[in-house]
Length: 264
Image (cartoon, rainbow, N blue to C red; front, top):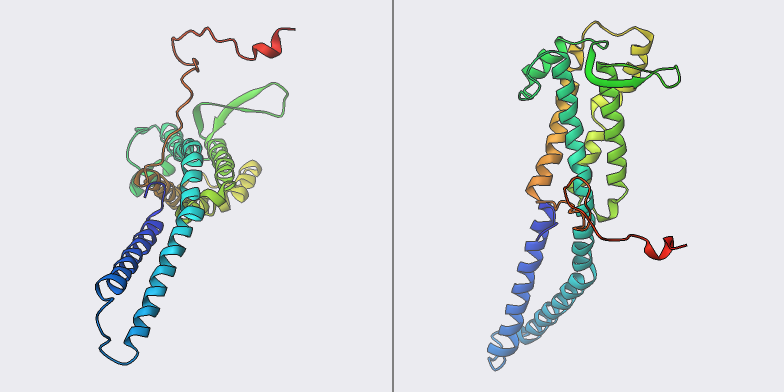
């Protein structure tokens, strides 16, 4: 059952239940009822027809397991361990966005994302409010400037869209529920309307605060929460780096990578 979505699990249970019904019926028909005379005209032929259907279903279900379900579970097991970090990044971008906005609004950066809190944060910042620890390039080569709230939103949306495209490039291996969650994030009001607002920002024609953005940001957070809930409910595996890697640790290594290619 691992690596299956909720709807696929329900379908899987139904198919298994039908298989057991078919096998029990076949057992009764050709073992326990084999010497029982028919109770009504045509009963024996109906029994044989039911037996043939039960055996056909058992054969079809076995074919389905070997050709469809087992390869699908194998592919998902292999693919999901690499997609799990990407799904984590979708969540991380939303968390990072609220952290930046809350800091810009000078409120608790880690407080809960209730609608009231999001509205308060948006009401305390303007498109030009500076965001701490964020630098963006300027038109001058090799020069940077302090990032603003609009720069932070643009940066987070751009990266999230790139991550979503990478996840959806594996659509053939993904459960439809996950595809729906990722597509919903891409189609949210915040993402769809941001381009126009970003252009207005550069032309200096935006409102003095971000109050009208509050509900769009809140909806975006709810959709990302759906992605996070899917990840947790389905216990998506996380990618574990090979044990020989030493970056980020105190370990040393005696390995000589690419030795056969570097001895010239």
